[in-house]
Structure formats: structure tokens, C-alpha cells
Image (tube, rainbow, N blue to C red):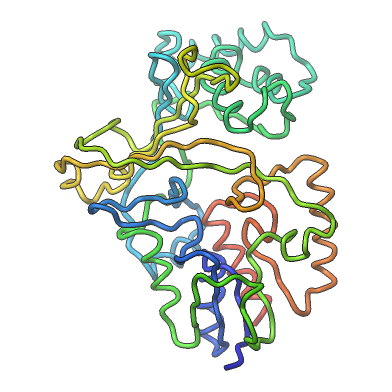
Length: 381
């Protein structure tokens, strides 16, 4: 069979593109090198709990079109992301809001909190911040930076904050209200039954075939008119200009015989960790956060009565070929390198289109992936 499209990657971008093309009679073969669909949003049912295999994915958007689109394929629960941060024996609400400031300084009014932050910013006397540490100090002052940003960021990027470029932090929102909702978007939630089930609904349409455990280089003699590629753009071109850099994440998932391990879906560990010292000399944790998966399923209160829970500890790590790339390192060097691949892709536009976070070398929230896929569909019609 000859297909109109060969789509490399069975994540959100590929699934949206395939199902929308099917609506106008165009056929697609969707392949993925992994053994599941859904990309990094894949969720695996385990002991009645839907485990976020590649880290927590919370859908949030203010785009009405995108929200209406995903609701064709799934019902969403009413989960609200309200993470907490652990610094030594202290517990803080995220994002930074009046609950956080009260815990830090005992203040009760927005005016008191603003005065405290403004005084700390002024004390730093930073007029032209030169690195991430100075950017953060000039935005939120010393206390918020030291307790809630510094250690977490160093673990996340594997470098000291004064060695990181300032552009990594474009802004640090301070909320002078008692609101622990991490996102400001109009819509928020998680598909009941998981993202994998939602993507199954997308791909369950005439004219779309799916092959898993299939790498692009091993696709064989499949005939197609155009390629939609959501894998790494540098890999597609054989790293001809050199490999693009990423940070990656390693997950340590554990099943525990308790009904409730940490009382919240997401707990960040914001104290630093010196990887050159033995763990016995540490006060912080080597992981950036712990996810307790059952707390994402707010519609299933019976899970809390079960004497089983599943947690995942997240460890940031350097990326190397063979492990999953997560976060593009968009510094000047990698931006220039990506531009070379982007220019090459423009020359090849008649035969291949790139999409998704790896094809575009940028971090996407899920709603932005879907929005980009719908835009790509419009250009193909």
C-alpha cells in the first residue's frame, strides 16, 4: 500500500496530523521506535493507577480551539496543579504566592510581602545581571532564590547558577494572592483513562495505520508521498553539522505499600546536592522532584483507600545518544547549530516537514504541540 504520509512519531503532533488528514481522505502510516503510542505523554496502568511513565503531564491551555479539539477524544478531570517545595525541613507552596511569603517571613498582606521582596532586590544592587543567579536575585531577592530556585536549578541543569546563562529565566512570577494553582490558563486537567487512551481514540480512524517498535531507518520499502518527521532533526540529517544538546531525565519508579506517600501529586526538592560528596554528608536530595501518580486522578477517590501507591523520583542528567532527549539547551551555540538544520529543512520542504519538540528543537507544552499540528494541517490542505 502507498500512503500519502509517513509520520515518524506517534506522539501528539503525529496523531493530530494523521487523524486530520484522514478526514479529507489522505492516508498515513504512523511509526514509532518505542512500543507504545502517545510519545512522552504515555501513561501505563499499574495496579489501577495511571503512571506517567515519562514524568508528569498536565494539560493546560487558554486556547478554546485546542480545548474543544482534545475534548473530542477524551473527558478531562478537574486536576489542578498545586505543587509544593521541600527545602530542608521547610514546606512551601508553589508558585510563589502569599502562602509562600507567609511561610518565609510571617507576612500577611501583599504590601508587606512586596516591601520585603523590594528591599532584598535593592540590597543586591544588580543593575545588569550577567548570569542566571543575578537575574533571579534581581527579580525575587535572596530568600526566594536561595530556598526555592538555586538548588533545584543547579540539579536540573547540572551546573552552578552563576555559570548558567540568564536567558533561562525570562521571568519569575510573584503572586500577591493566596492562589496555589501553578497555571493561569482557562482550562486544566488530565484525560480520564490517560493520554495513551486519548491518542488511541485519535488514531482509531480509517486511513491511518500504526506500526510500533519501528525505527525510521528500518521502515523498509514503504511507499509514501511526503514525510512528517517528529524525531530529532539533527538525527534525520545524520548529525552532519554536529549533535544538538539536550538535558534529559531519569525516572526511578517504585510501588509502595502505603495508601498515601506524600499527600500531593508533585513535590519539588529545592535544596542543592553536591554530587562530588558522599550522600552521608548531604542535607539535600539528588532528585529534583517526586511524583505520586494516584493524586492526579481526582475523579477516582477510591484510590486513596487502597494500600498501594506508586511514586517516581526524577533525576536530571546530561543527554547522550541512546537516552531520551527532553529539554533543548537553547544557548547561542545550539541556536546557531539548529539554524543550519532549519535552513537545510527549508530546502527539503517538498519531501519532509518537521514537527514537535525534537523536530523543531524547542520545548512545547502539550497544547502548543496540538496547535502547531493543526497549523501544519492547514498548510497541507
